[in-house]
Amino acid sequence: MKTVLIVEDDLINARVFSKILVKRGGLDVKHTENVEEVMKIATAGEADIILMDVSLSRSVYQGRAVDGIKITQMLKANAQTAKLPIILVTAHAMEGDRENFLKQSGADGYISKPVVDHQQFIEQILALLPKD
Image (cartoon, rainbow, N blue to C red; front, side):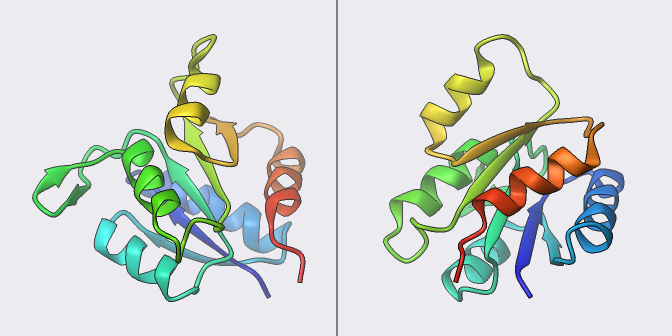
């Protein structure tokens, strides 16, 4: 069973995502907005893919406020976690944002909130899951 780590500071969103992932995707879910915990789970190989909220309002790492872009950059820069697929999730999708966010962060994919099409949401995640 594959595990999706949801990094999201909005509990309602996290709950909605969890439900879709478990019910429709048959996936296991972990949730945290604690950056230390994200790093720990990622380096320990306890997640197969990360859903990363772009605008984490309360997340701090080593004394600095960080957002989903920054956390993604840190994961992609670390040899241990560089191959872990990361999908950015954002509600603020303006024209061109998507490309900028992806380029800036090195993320593997992009999902806009709110998630309307649950099937497409699952398919996007399954498509990026490592096949083993």
